[in-house]
Amino acid sequence: MALTDYYCVFNRLRGTSLVSPEDLRQACRQFGKLGFAFGLATIGAVTVVQMQGGLDTNSLNVTALLQQHAYLTAGILARSHRVSAIVAAAWLAEEEARGQVARDESIEGLRYYPNRFLSG
Image (cartoon, rainbow, N blue to C red; front, side):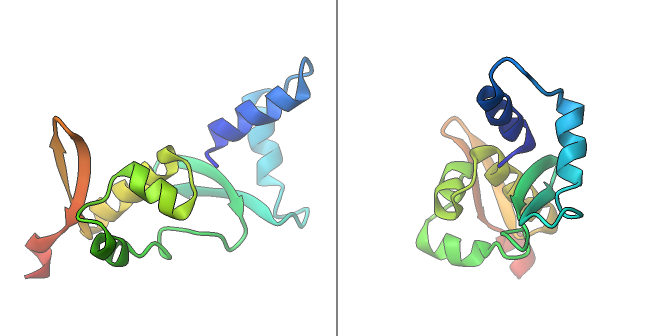
């Protein structure tokens, strides 16, 4: 879950006794030291709260997903990995930076395809 979403959920549950964004970020940084099963991670430019050993961009198999779908969008990736669309968009941006996918921006939206330019 994106840290911004986590902040909203956390404060909604607290009701009127709200926590500042920086206090929550500092608390999340302590999760690992306290032995919690989750902690902070960064995916692209997005900071997320995730389970330790959870999904990261190294475990993301874009090739397998592209074989199932003609193209990828943040929505497709979010549904298949059960993450928010913001996190999925950050994953796809990282995959594009690595050269694994090529992006197509059109009136239909942002879609990612296999990068055939680098595959020879």
